[in-house]
Image (tube, rainbow over all chains, first blue to last red; front, side):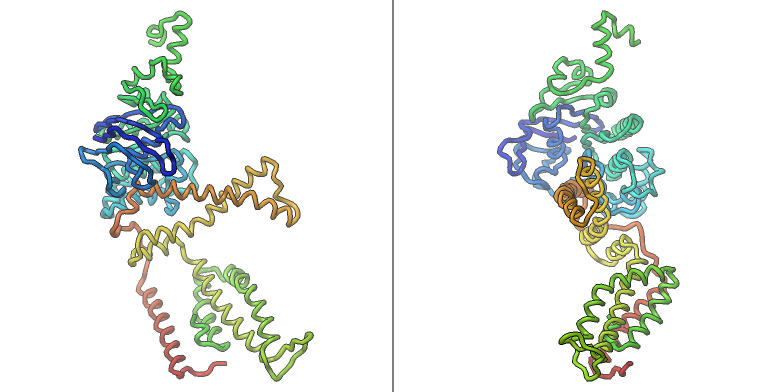
Length: 265
Length: 232
């Protein structure tokens, strides 16, 4: 379990905190969605939850990050690598830039962990298989499309076999098929006990994927609940979040005097 | 280096004829290597010829330009330097044309170089084509907004300036993001790591390497002790 308790974080050089008094709990095997407008503080929560802030990027943190009951404060980031990893939305910078093939790229993390070669190979193959991108294995990473790069970046994280994965807009550059594929992969990962924190603007993806959703606004978590509770909340638009198509369609039907439950059935 | 240590014409020519040319023929890159080496050597060669021919003192004056005498001794000296330079540039060119930078860096890591140094070396080698590609994208974006990057040399130079800032800034931003992504993948973990790939290293290649090292050390030793035979 990964838990943020009373976390306030301020970036280096800034007087005002980017997030304040954040409490968030991510249970094993759970998929927790994080939604909110741009600049709400979602990416900052990702940085803090992954241990990169303040360990790698500096800044001031109060409150605690605990993983499986252990406080992570002061630990070097490489010690966290098998417990929690984070993927960012810019796939171009998620790749190392030195690998000659996608397979090699995915294998870099397990190599860094000092694993034996058979284990490295097994993890890389399994990660590619999970995202159904085995056919990209021999391709040069710098010759992939944005969507393919994103999938490879996620595969690179999966190959680390962490207990918690944080993904900041993992489908930002993906087409509908790629988005569906990532959704399936995340569901499969959660089935193995991996906990996932997924930041997304695509609420349609989160709607069918997440057990719980947290809404971030102005650096704080303003609402938390089941996907149905959150996406049916009339304040969603005020928080800068678009409701999923299911909800919008239901409202449109209800506005015309039709019963969505009957029509959509 | 051996070309400089041996000196004269014969030493560098022997290295070219007995080592570099056969290796290049095996690699099938003779034409490209000669072109690359010629271009690499040309700027230095021009200054070597001018300085050596016109400033080297000598008794056989070939012709004079103003206060400068072109001497036979200067021509001889320039010739010796040029053949050495060409041997060196051929050797460097052969190395560059036949060695995969990634393979080199991985092999260095396998031989004990730290993974961090290996990554920096590898990333540096990869950075040039990446930056060229990024500059192309930024240039296309600037041109779409009316920047003139064609025409006279002056216009081209003027067109380069708006590219410098975005290319450098975007590269710096990318470095920061990439370093975070690498941190997440345990890049800073101390200790060695098991590599997936090993450069093919046949016994004959190992023998050739050690033979070259031995030959170089022997030549240096003979030179230092004054026992090296005079070569033409």
